Length: 220
Image (cartoon, helix red, strand yellow):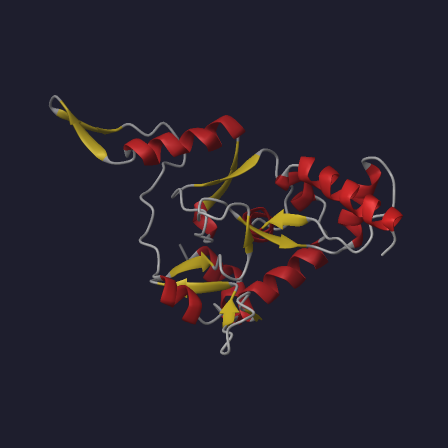
């Protein structure tokens, strides 16, 4: 790659970083979403631990205790401390055109990384456009079930962290009354216990059966 191509690629990376995840997800076609989601539910990828003799095949999405989980060892994450969300590179024309239109220039071989939860929300909701931000009702960014992902105002999205920090979703006694202090709709819920590291590393893909809407909607 020439210096000019490298420069254009780096410029487009900077432009894509400034694009909100919902904007990138909204630009994806139905075909691009179907292809990615089918892969996540049915295929694996090699572990990133290249020096390991026995590199594991990692599931992208798996089921544990009837809950769909994103595997942060298979996806790339925005933070290294398990507090970031999972992303996936989409090397498709619709995203190349979107990034390029910000300022012009050649996109090159680099592919924008799109938040996985935004793509899943569109898949679960008949490919509807995201209007605000995608929140996680249970507060765990790795829970990928249909009921955990909702489209809501950014302020409400960020305020859910207070509910989980102070456990406002739990019932408390106020005088003779019992109430829940969570102001959100749908109400925040307790995050499930995460699988162990070994369970993440040894998990099998959720499978083709979870691509059917009836099964997706019945999975937490």
